[in-house]
Length: 254
Image 1 (tube, rainbow, N blue to C red):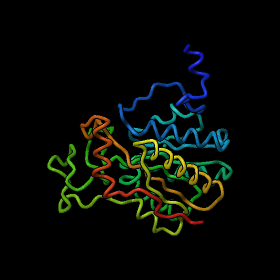
Image 2 (cartoon, helix red, strand yellow):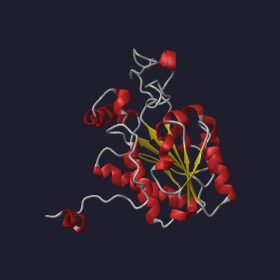
Image 3 (cartoon, rainbow, N blue to C red):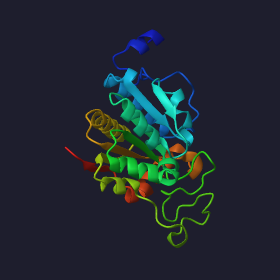
Image 4 (cartoon, one colour):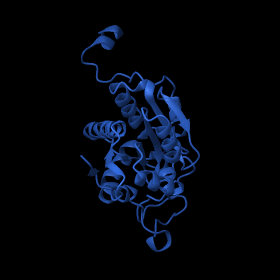
C-alpha cells in the first residue's frame, strides 16, 4: 500500500485534529497533556467554536499550551487563570472560555481563585491536570501528592502529620452552589479517553448555555517526576491514584 493510499484509507486509525498546530510538543514521553490537548482541540472544532474560544494557559508544564491549539489564548499569572477567565467571559459572554491548569497552579497557589470562581458560578470550564507532583520545577510535593508518595521535597514520603492530607479539590468543587458539572476522568486507555472527551464536551456546552461553572479533573501521569516508564506510570496511577481519586461524575446539574 502506498503512502497516499494509507492517508486516504477509511481505516485510518488517527488523524491530527484540524486545530492542532504542527509544533513539536515539549512534553515528556508518556505525558498525559498531549492527549488532553487533542481532546480539547477536537471538541472545539466539533462545536464549531474555533473563532469564539478563549483558552487561559497556566504556569507549569502546560505553560506553552498556546503553541499547540490554534485558538485565541491568554497567559495568566501563576494560579490566576480563573480570574482572567472570569473577566474574558463577562466581557465576551458569547465566547467559550476555559482554563487549562495543573495541580500546583489550580490547587495550590490558585486555590482561592479556583474556589471563588467556581462558587460564583462563572460560566467557564476549568480543566485540571492532576499528576500529584510539580512536574516542571523538579518533582516537588504538590497538594495532590498521595500519602506515602516520595517526591523531591518529601523524600521519605508524604507524612500527614507533617504535610497534611492530599487535597481533593474536585470534591470541594462539587459542594459549591455555583458549580454545574464536576467530574474526574483519565486518559490512560481508549475507553478512558472517550469518557474524558465526552466530559469536556458536556462542560463546554454548559458554559455556553449559562448553567454555571464546570470543573474537569484529569488524573494523569508524570513519568519523569515519578521516575517510571510511561507504561509503568500508567499502571502506578491505576493502582494508587484511582483509589484516592475515584473516576466519574461528582455533580451534574440538569
